Amino acid sequence: MPPSNLTHFDPSSFILMGIPGLEAAYVWISIPFSMFYFVGMLGNFLVLFTVGKEQTLHKPMYLLLCMLALTDMATPTFVVPKALCIFWFNFKDITLGGCLTQMFFLHAVSLMHSAVLVTMAFDRYVAVCDPLRYNTILTNLRIAKLVLVGLIRAVLFILPLPLLLSRQPFCSNRFIPHTQCEHTAMVKKSCGDISANRAYGLVLLFIINGVDLTLIALSYGHIIRAVLRISSKEAHQKTLNTCTAHVCVMLMYYTPSLISNLTHGFGQRIAPQVHIILADLYFLVPPMLNPIIYGVKTKELRDKMGKYICKL
Image (cartoon, rainbow, N blue to C red; front, side, top):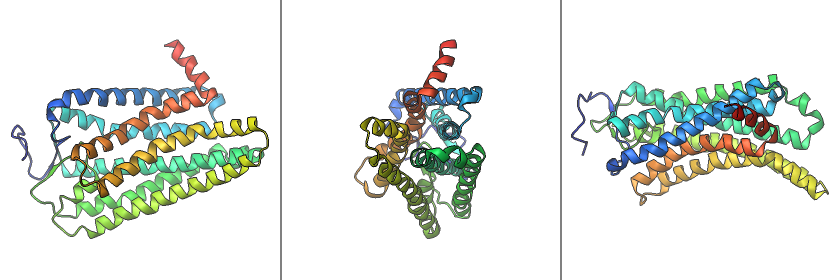
């Protein structure tokens, strides 16, 4: 049943229910939400500030890291403010246009994030397998072009999602048990034929993610083969260390995404609260940990960031 304390509800809008069943704990839930968001924004801003200030860091690897930081700042920004409005003020209504806009940006930024990870895998492949030509192959201009291609791809592939949904008739039950407008949740509220929406969603999930993961796997397949050819164990370790941060960031991104999708598709016995919390953690935890991972694993960046932190 919808909450009785909702007032001035526009019947043409939607209601984001937050985390149904945990309403009494909203104040406590908002604390980690706020902390994760603040730490993530601060860490990623520090990465952007450091790379922008230091001319020695104006290299392809760090430019890609800046793009990763931008996507990590954008992702929770499209989720946390509305979630906190639900937790703190019980502001749950959202217009159809607002819902479709949030859904578009969430999925587009996610796809852009994946494209950046693919480009970073290519960067590591060239650095390990063809180091003498690294500066020739991966120029800043080429990195900018690859990032632009990733951005165009994200917009073109995600734009049909809100366009298809905007043509759908929606039922009177517009209560969405979530903290944000997800494509799957909105499709369930439609009273029309959703076969095209479901089919396109599956195409995005399996084709796009499949292509990205395949390209990353191919890059690391070549990297592993190149490492195995090195006789020195010390050289082995040094070479693998250059990829550690990227591997950790990939695991932080793809693993929660895979778990969330699997629980939605096959975890019917899992409590709805678990689905919602897993989705929220997917938007909050990786953006918070990524700058920490790169700050710890990348000595040059760590030293430069440390210099600015000490000045605070």
